[in-house]
Amino acid sequence: MTKDMNKDFKEQEIVIELKLLDKNRNYSRIKKAIKSLGSKQVEFEMNIPNGKKADKIQDCVTSLVSGLTYEQNSEYVSFWVPSAACRFFCYIGGGFTRFQKTIALSLTKNASKCMYEFCCRWIDKGGYQCSIEEFRLLMNTGSKYKQISHLRTRLLEDSKKELEKKADIFFDYSLKKKGKSYHSISFKFHRNTEIRDKYSGVKSEQYIFIYNFLNRFFSNQMDSKAMHYSDLITESGKADDAYYRFLRLDDDFSTGRKTKDDIKNLLKAVILKELGA
Image 1 (spheres, rainbow, N blue to C red):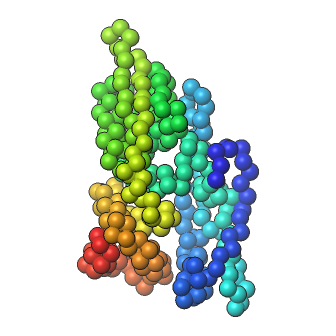
Image 2: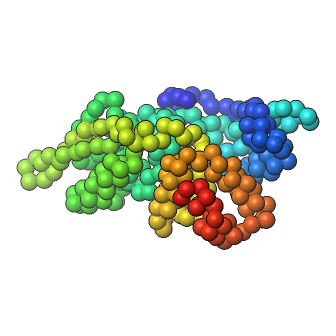
Image 3: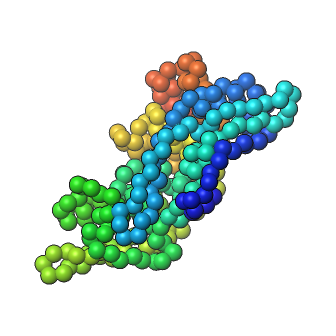
């Protein structure tokens, strides 16, 4: 992992034991899963810091896996990760770690995700101060939150509450006036050790897969059920069981053996209860 935006990310070959992907070493199942994953496109943005001016936004679309190779009767399988996907997995600009990427996925509000990235960038400094206009540029608010009351309630207060509850880093802030108008804003950043301990025993890649899988059936645009179920599963110590069970369900969905409604009904009626959610 790196913070260097100029790093030349190249396509990577990942070699892994079959038994780590499937305890029965079922290559056919792994092949189907990789083909399914390779057909899915992901989109993400990179915020490139640019001093006091607005960050440069780099938009990327890529598949996470571009290919698979396997030698018959081998104990190992190789799959290929495109260069753009390598950047997505490995770039930690602004201080992001694997753990923090897991936390960021659990946040339901876009404003909270923006403020979380902001906190991660400046946590080592303990605090940050800038003008209101500079802060708007840093947050890339555009035409949103033009009124200071909207900036305070919708961006700052809502994000502050969610980060205090769900993230490993949260913030306090104060607005300062120059004359009759608010002119600058000061932040103080804090580490939330209780949240860090909550996730420390869970593999981040498993938590991310569990959350993303559930989010397909319980979209966070409607409510926070996907995040709630993911947290209950990890707290019950059944993240490993959920991970492999959801892999099978994902395979069933990708191959058409089960519809989206079939899986959602199965999750609600049986599986989530068995997993402690």
